[in-house]
Image (cartoon, rainbow, N blue to C red; front, top):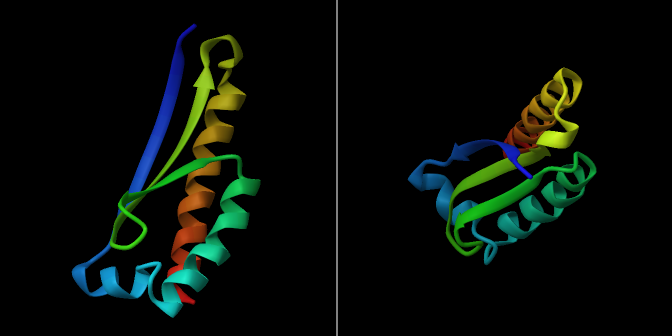
Length: 93
């Protein structure tokens, strides 16, 4: 069975790395506020290289070929865009 994986990512400047670290108070708040909306969008996310030093956040969604339609393709694309919007909203406060 084949799949289509749609991925986007957001990188952060060096100055934001310390602020977004899970070890900081702001970082813990950022991740707690981000967890729920992304899980509601049914997207996967990954933090690189680690939660202690955030350089980039990937957001992805997988569509299996047996369920691939124009509707599921665009729905997944919009879920990923909404996920990136959630990240931006949480960063900008």
